[in-house]
Length: 501
Ligand code: PHE
Image 1 (cartoon, rainbow, N blue to C red):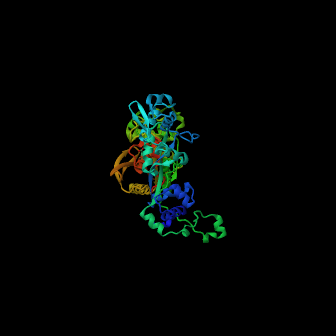
Image 2: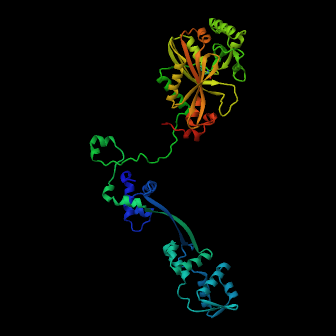
Image 3: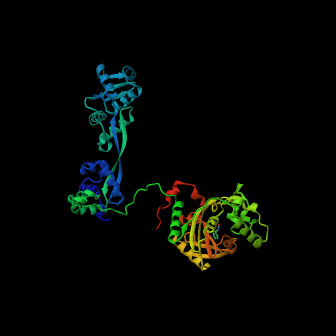
């Protein structure tokens, strides 16, 4: 610990403590000795405790105060009332019963008074009588203590001498005479390293340091002669829960930036698609299992058949009839669905305008009528990247994958053959997740089949890949349950770092 990072407040406190002979000192003593405010002292103590320059201990003391009413300065204890009464009768002895009856004392006070008078040696009991004994002139120790309390108001029990302590213990047992309470104070002392650091300081180098560079200091040139306090950038800070972008939206932004850095332009399209665009254009046969109600959300309304491009319908129906060898039906194509993937967006975009070369991407929600589990949602995001051009191959597609994943921080990738009705060959990428020590399936991809691209008029080769964004989010945020992403649990949202290195 260097003294470099010490604040002037800390320096003042340390100099005071190192000179203080009665260390450990209470906070009040530090306030008095440093002329700092109690708040400054408290704050300084916290910093120094953290830096292990001081230790703090709690000291608990018992204090006593008199419970006798304030205006009753001349307190008379029952034993005094008893002996005064006996001397007033002029007799040497008196019957106990008589005595009790003739005095305005409560039973408990009378008994305590009698016992104390005997203990003080003022009276002696003899059968049913009590006999006045020796002198009762001087105050008893208990009377003395009560007297002291009327003057001093509050006495620390550890300050009592042996006789007073006895009197205090006796008074404590008697009804309504004393109040005792405990108070805890904090005491501070320098640690060994605090003492070493303090020894290099003097009052003069605790000169005020400036923590802010202001325009005034700059303009006047006074900054040249100003002593600035050093900043301890490694100090712990409080956690603040600022408003922030949802981790998933953060990832969407990152993915979009990656695509853009790779020369792709963004496209977008509606959630509601006709089955024609969601499936038929993609050469997905009308009896394909993905088109079942259990997998796809169908909407009640259908689009009028005449709204579909006649020429395109003719070409698509022809490739289905020829390719899959069944009778393609318009009725199945005009059913509305919530898009099950983002590929219809890609195809609709490519069908208008058809660039010979191009790179496009989309990020959007898709919907699947599946059972929700820790790894499946009914509504999630898909990413899709598409490249069209003349001399493209599967190797380019795999290269693009590696580049794309590496920009997301994923280094190990492998590919697996798979099947999609609209691509040939088709691949599945698997990425290695270090934290889990596992390979995870990520994106589907392939080269669009001639049956697909010819219908929409594309001549070049078209590579495409796509898949769930939430998968990447799970890898990125180390999650085991994808539903957690949508629970909006504040503790989780706050725990996700805003920036990961
Ligand atoms: N649409 C596919 C899916 O939903 C992914 C894919 C996109 C496959 C593009 C090939 C080409 O999983």
